[in-house]
Length: 89
Ligand SMILES: [Zn+2]
Image (spheres, rainbow, N blue to C red):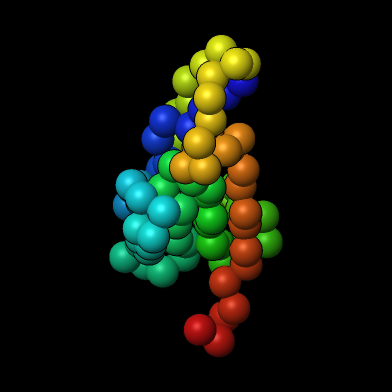
């Protein structure tokens, strides 16, 4: 199975690299188009364009671990949660 090793995205507008290093490490870019959160526990991304791939480029890295690898709560299967940032924010 795949384990998340690096949770990072690059904003396509301002070029900032947003790397979330821990579960509560919320980072947003200087132009405000996207954010990243969740560290290695989950990937929570925010974006302002219609499709997330228009807002940011995914730079996340994974590593293959044996299926019997004992996953603790900090390392569930990588999952992406994307949310559109409300323009009023
Ligand atoms: Zn940006």
